[in-house]
Structures are given as C-alpha cells and as structure tokens.
Amino acid sequence: MSLAAPASPPEELPEDLEEAILELKAERNAVLLAHYYQESEIQDLADAVGDSLGLARAAQKVDKDVIAFCGVHFMAETAKILNPERTVVIPDMEAGCSLADGCPADAFRAFKAQHPDAAVVSYINTSAEVKALSDLICTSSNAVQMVEHFKGRPLIFAPDRHLGRFVAQKANRPDLILWPGACVVHEQFSAKGLAQLKVRHPEAEVLAHPECEEAVLAQADFVASTTGIIDRAVESPAPTLIIATEEGVFHQIRKRVPEKELIQAPGQDESCSCNQCPYMRLNTLEKLYLCLRDLEPEVTVPEDVRLAALRPIEKMLELSA
Ligand code: 13P
Ligand code: SF4
Image (cartoon, rainbow, N blue to C red; front, top):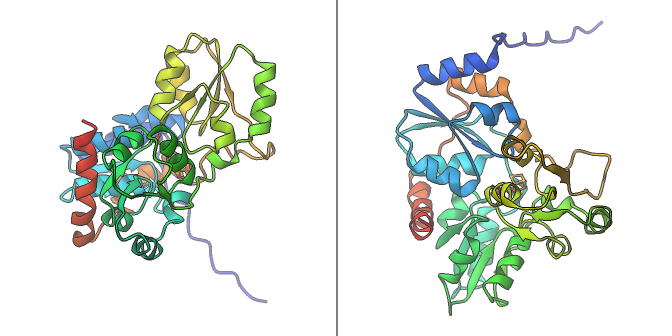
C-alpha cells in the first residue's frame, strides 16, 4: 500500500481578516492600492482605488515603505518602476493579464524591427520589458492623446488591437500599426446579445470599455476607461445602465448611485462568470493578509529594464498631468 504525502497544514488565518489587514498595514507602514476589478471587500480596504492611470499617479505619490498592490502584475510592476526604493508586494504573483502575456518582449522586439521608422506607443497592460522598448505608454483614458503626440510619424500601437482600432479612428490614424492582442474578458461580450438587450431596455445607456470588440463599441453610447465608466454612470440621466466591462466596477457605482439599475452586458457564453477577470480575481483577502504578513510575493524589476521603462511612463504622466 502506498502512503500519500501528508498535505501541508492549512495557513492559520485570523478570524477578522479585514481588521488584521489594517493592523498589518500600519505595522508595515504600507499603502494599499486597488483596481476596480478587485472584489468589493478589497476595494473597501484600499487607500486608493482607481483605473490604471489613477493607480500609476497614486504610486508616484507614495511615501510609505511598502506598497501592497491589489491588481494585476503589470500594474504592480509599474508601481515598482516608479518606486525602486520601496517594497512592492502583490497578493498573487500569478495575477497576469492576457494582453501583457500575449506580447512577449522577444516577439515584440522582432515586430518592432520590421518597422524601423516607427515610434511605439504601448498600452500600460504590458511587461516592463515591452515598456522598455516603447517611446510612450498610454492607458485607456489617455490613449488618443498619447497617439496624437506622434502626428506625422509612423506609429506602432501594442498590444490591444481593439483599443488600437478605436484610437486609430478617434485620432484619425488609419495607418496605426497594431499588435494583434486582445483581452479575454472584454472580447467575450456578445454584440448580438447586447443588441437584443437594448431592445428590451430602450431607456438604458450603454457604457463600454475600449478593449471591447468593434461590434460592441458600435452600440455603446459612451466608451471610456473604468474610471470614465463609473463617473458617467453616476452623471448619466439614464435610470438604467448596461455595462460592458468587468463587473468589479459595479461596486463603486452602487455606492454612489444605489437607485440606478445596472445590467451587465451579456457574454457569448452565459453559463460562465466570464465578466470577471480570471487574473484579477486570483487576489483575495486571505492572500492580501499573507502578502502583508510575509512581504512576499515581492515584485522586482532588473535595474536596466526599470530605467528604460521609467522614461516612457514618466513621459505619459507628464503629458497627461
Ligand atoms: P482601466 O485603466 O480602464 O482601469 O483598464 C484596466 C484594464 O485592465 C482593463 O481591462
Ligand atoms: Fe488584462 Fe483583460 Fe484582465 Fe484587464 S480585464 S487585467 S486587460 S485580462
């Protein structure tokens, strides 16, 4: 008879996790930054909740020893690039992003070599190595402005082809050279399902993230970053909002306008929770507690890569100040 290896004992966790996290945060002299796609309990504990641009700005102003970053790896990495002297931890090191993962630095270097005269605007959803190969970084809230910065020059836009196509239209840059990446969450919204839903809710306004497919964006009344979607949901005169982005944004909207009806845009497969980012949702309160307790997993960036990536990030922050 073979004996199975004993399972490792379960972690001892405090009963009141929220309280324990706040105590550890003070003990570690830490700041807690969270993206809107985190679970509500994490958003409510954070010192700052924001979209990618808001979180990069918040990271630039940190004066604590430790940043506990509740978001995906490229966001925590950006915080580290801006804060080389501080410790940056993330609850789950596997919290990646289909856009960043689908644009490896070696392949991107080869793509860039095919367009030697082109400048490069990279979406913040990229690795530090890809940022280091870029002239300017953008987020969903300033992408049009960042592309317009390179008027008259051939331009590569990476890695989201849907955001790239949207920006090419807005900035009148049909020549934009696009890396063919996509977000697994935003690509799964169904244009057909949305058209059917709009018929049932003629009073609704449709708010969408620019990572959605063209046929979804074509039906949207308002296209913006997560912060833009939340602000519009609050300000819109419409009593009903159909929202095509990760459902984490619902928490902030409900806090500010609880009377409004919020409807998630339908996905192509209604049997799954595909409107939740599988990477963002790897972070949990338990893992946040452990990462503050153990100060790991720690996000690090080699110094040569950090310095090369810092330049286009700082330029973006200057241009969109
Ligand atoms: P925002 O910058 O709009 O929050 O977008 C981040 C992201 O990953 C969208 O999927
Ligand atoms: Fe990346 Fe999409 Fe998740 Fe945003 S929602 S972090 S783009 S996989």
